[in-house]
Length: 259
Image 1 (tube, rainbow, N blue to C red):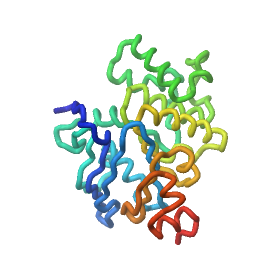
Image 2: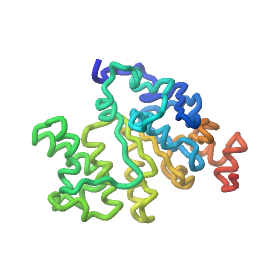
Image 3: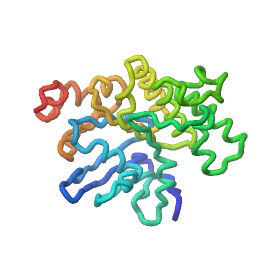
Image 4: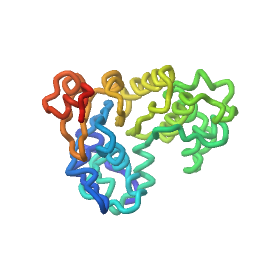
């Protein structure tokens, strides 16, 4: 099987199960299990070096692009293990898209940036045009660029570029969108627009957000998972974790008293 074809069984859309990732020097993630239900936004928080980025990259097999890492455990998408040898990692990344910390736009037009993934799979022009418009609308960028889609993408502001990257990921119609600190390089106004986009998208997609910003987690997420030294310390509804954490480590982190 080269594609992800399972229709699921009513459980979580995406689930990490006993995930352990190790380099030659240390264990980066240790037996981590976490479910991601439909129409939700989970914020993954924790101190620098706790394994947040490695974890989110494991959810669509991008972690395999880092040499020297061993991976044990499973990531189940719609009932199927994405690490099964029969599964094509390219198909995984179509279903489970990713947006990075810094905008990665290509030196071409706004339209062609949004259409990039669709061109790769040789969609017809009618499908491309329809999908690009829909993706730009979902990303909150359409009204700002609809009259100038041939504008160079690099002429957009940083916040607009990041929303264009979100549109590019959405154009190929994933079920899951991974966001690795997508606003850390943006000013407050641009951050607010990207957060508004995330809040809209979580109504229809599974979103997983890595953020160093506890305030951002409070504003946009439904659930918070706190990582420390590769371990999942605590996970639960956002208000419970940020206002009534059970674990001392979580309390120290969210109150800024973390050592």
